[in-house]
Image 1 (cartoon, each protein chain N blue to C red):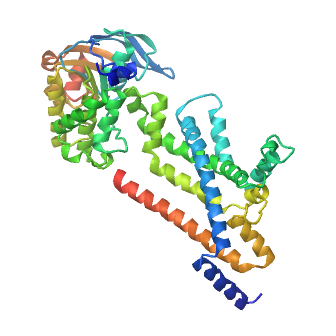
Image 2: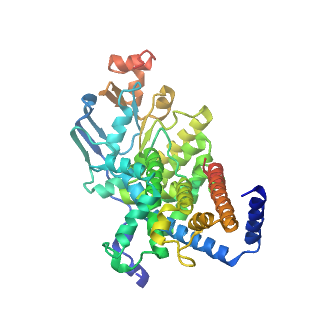
Image 3: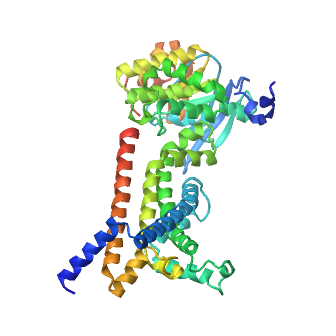
Length: 236
Length: 255
C-alpha cells in the first residue's frame, strides 16, 4: 500500500462520518448502547461494593482490596473466555441463549469495568471516610447512611472513575469479539469492526470508526477534566 | 390528628430527646491504647449550668476526655453514666465541634440540613431552624455557597451553628478556636456565650489561658492523663491547688 491509498481511505472515512453512513451509525450506536449499559450495570455493583469495603471492617477485607486492584488490570480476552464458557450451550447459563447477543457483550464489559469502578470508589470513599468518620459518628449517623453520604459527597471523583470505566469498556475488543462473535448488524461494535475490516483491507470504514473512537476518548477525558475543575471551583 | 399524620411511620413522630441527660458521671475511667495509659482514673461529674473548660498542656488528654464523654471512644476501664438511661435520647441530646472542622461537600445551608436530618428533626421545622442559626452565626448571606470555600473562621462558625441547630443539651467543643485569628475567635466566643445563654451545657477544651479566663465557670485541669484539679474558675485562676496547675498558669509547664 502506498501513501495515496492511505489518503484515499482517509478521505472515504471522513466522507462516511460526515454523511452519517447508515452502517457506520448503526455500529456506533450499538457500541454506545453496549458500553453505556455495561457501565451502568458495573456502577450499580461497583459503587456499593467499593463503598462497603471502604467503610466496613471485616475479616478478609485486605484480600478483597488486593483482589479489586488486581482485577482492574484483567485482560479482556480472559473475561471474554470466562463469559463464553458460562454462556455457551454446555455452560451453566447456556439455557439463557445469550451467547452472541448484545446482552452477552454487556455482561462481559461490565465484568471488566466493575473492578475498576469498585477499586476507584473504595479509594475515594476511604479517603473521604477518614475525614468524615468522627463527625458522622458524632451526629449519630449509622454505617448505611454514612455510605450514602460518602458516595454523594464523593460524586465528582466517582464520576471520573465511572468515565474511566466507560473508556475501558468502549475501547476493548478482546471480550466482545469472543462473546459477541462480531455478527454483522447484530453484535458488531466499533472495535470488532475495526479489527475485521482492517484484516479484510477495507481501511475506510476501519479508519472512520477509529476516528470516532478517538474522538469519544477525547470527549470522555475532556468531560472528566471539566467535571474535576468545576468541582474544584465549587467545592474546594 | 389528620389522616396523613396518622399514616406516618411511628419514628417520624418521635421528637428529639426532651428528658434531661445531665448530669454525666465518670467513675475511675482509664483509657489505654497499645499499652499506653492516656487517661488514668478520671472521676468527674458534668452538671447542668456552668461552662466547663478542660485545661492542660498539649497531650494531657483533653480531647480524649471529650471524646469519651461524647461517646466516640469507649473507656478501657471505669464507667460513664448519663442521668437518662435511653441511649438514643442521650445520643441526640449532645453535639460536638471538632478542632479540625469537617465541612460536608455541600452548601452552607445543606450542612445544617444534614445534621437536622441525622438528628431526626421533623422536616417541616428544618428550614426555619436553618435560617435562624445561619442568622445567629452571621452566615445568612453565605447560605448557598459551598461550605468548603468559606474562610477558616466562617467554617468554624458554621460547625458551631450546625451543632447548635440540633438544640443539644450538651455541646462539646474541642479547641474550637485553635486555628483562628483574634477577630474570628471573638466571634466564636460570643456565639458560644449565646448558646450557653439558651441553656445548653458547654464543655470545651482550650490551651488558650485568656479564653479560659473569659469563658470558664468551672475548670478541670488535666496533666499527663490525670485530672489534677477541678474547681470553680474564680478560685482556680486565683490560686490553683496543685503545683502543675500553678506552673501551667505561669506559662512554665509546656508538656
